[in-house]
Length: 142
Image 1 (cartoon, one colour):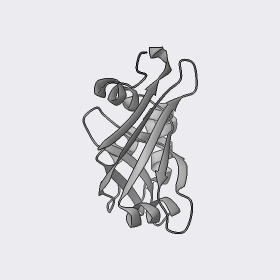
Image 2: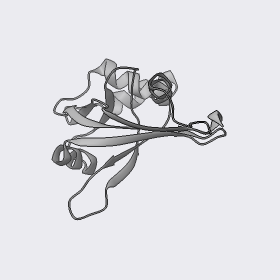
Image 3: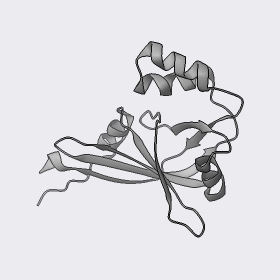
């Protein structure tokens, strides 16, 4: 029987593709917070997530100090990658270039630029995560 588990190179390449990520972070006395997010990732690097400081996500991440992010394909063959790790930093806004890189992954260039111009502020936070543990599945390996 063949394994559906991706190699390190396959999972990092998949995570670097454009997918809506689902962020999961623990919360005391409640179910884990699980919400969709835009993110950026380059193989071998850090996972970057831009959000508003003081948001529910931001508060939960600051308290937990770690998170998981899952990316999946919703078409055949189904695939997913989950990356889990500690938060390296989450106390400064992204640079304009970092914000544009994230926004342009999900929006056409002009719309992404308008989004950044309207959303990037001193209250923004760039969450940087070092992936340490991985789960993956590639049904195309059947």
